[in-house]
Length: 611
Ligand code: AGP
Image (cartoon, rainbow, N blue to C red; front, side, top):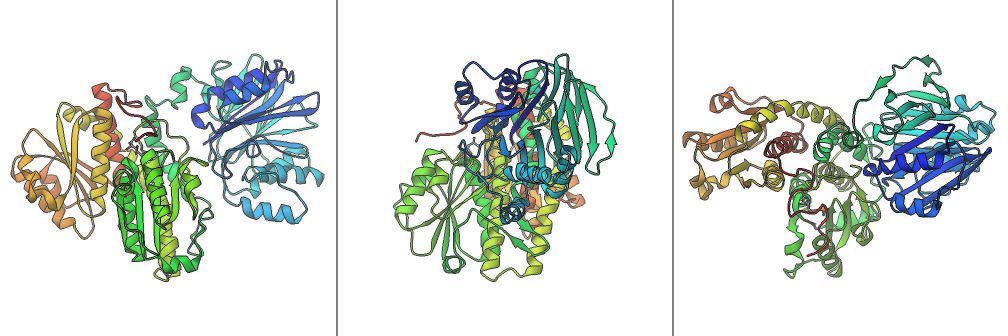
């Protein structure tokens, strides 16, 4: 997720762009840049690192041009660097982009064959190259931009300047937010309201498949077919701080609701349903090495460890490769056995967790092939991966409690399982198509699961005063129970622990009382009846049952408790992701009612870079 800002007006653009980018820094902060049209010539300044690095480069904003675009980046293609920073230029076109162009390699190949030379590793540069080529072919800017939009596949919000059209700024939107603001001193383009709220509250929210041509005095809107469209101007009544959270009270809540988009962005461009294929460009394991794999060891901490537990079930089921999952802090000190044919899969949202980095090095030294699953391109862990990195495209996760990183990590592990299973001859084309169709349907199910938020807020109000919770799951849902318990304890400070349901009779059942809510996670899998039995054990001893059910459960469930949260059911692997969302929301609403610091809970850090 990146931040875009643009301006056309009477004032110098430079300081307006920098100020706007600072207000969008939460959307990404690994590099930044601006382009200003100075008397018909582009001045482009870019810097790796946060916006402060760009500011230092710009000095006192000596650029006087009154038309410009700016960008703060969250890398998805191409590591953070000045070369990969936006804006990207090709001839007369300068571009900033938020989103993921699915078919960028195809376009890049065709343009390269036509003699175009690319400077960066990004998907964004193909937009600038394509616009410029169409201009060279004699098309007018608006038509060149329209034709480009129809060539691109994927999600994009784009700002474009054309060198010999100094008074116009173009914008294009498909599946990524893009706003046009109308101020007293000019007209603005932005990814999000915070960037321009200090200049205007009068905004148009563009819709998918729309183009805008912005002038200092206003803007004209078109669809991708070239038809003019009329847009309503809204007055945004939101303070900049709230706006930074997209109108949500906390970043964590915003990020919970971003998960359908984050999962979509994570698999977008990596699958072909038609061919039944998964493409993991970041992997460098040969097919021969895949055939020789004898064991996979997943290493991680905290929520990433829980994702690994889910991944184990998926990978073992679809590839029949034995998988073990270990806490990084344990693995590094247990003199681990790493024999020939072992693949180490290290999972880390930040890519900077000290224990995970150290354990990964330990595994590598002992001969393990290393693949990393990270959310930050160029992070320390990503540089340790001898056999490649598979990035989650979750965008920056600001809330300390991990949410969208968790669900996108599971999505990546699912892709990895399909990738390995197919190459080991265990998944034929039809099976691959079916499993990929389930993945494509998943974001819609996640959206439905998020609709339980109001029900969960009411449930949270009833149970916030309790001082201990027990979470139960079986099979793949045991890992979801662990994750649900972690979410509750780390943001509400209420004690919570998780158990495999089958363990109840081996001790935890002694805990059951009317004082302790028991969260039971239920899905129509091979242990469904067993889980019903565990729920009955709780109810018959007077325990409090909160049931989170994937798919409509038996009517018997409704006789056990009034607190039943039902979400859609996907296949036996992906249902775990759908069930996670209401558990995140329960923890969030309880913490919110308790008034804890949800985004920055006490004693915690977003990235634990020390032992
Ligand atoms: C998750 O909510 C916690 N913030 C924490 O357990 C986190 O998952 C853990 O520290 C690992 O972080 P990483 O994914 O960045 O390595």
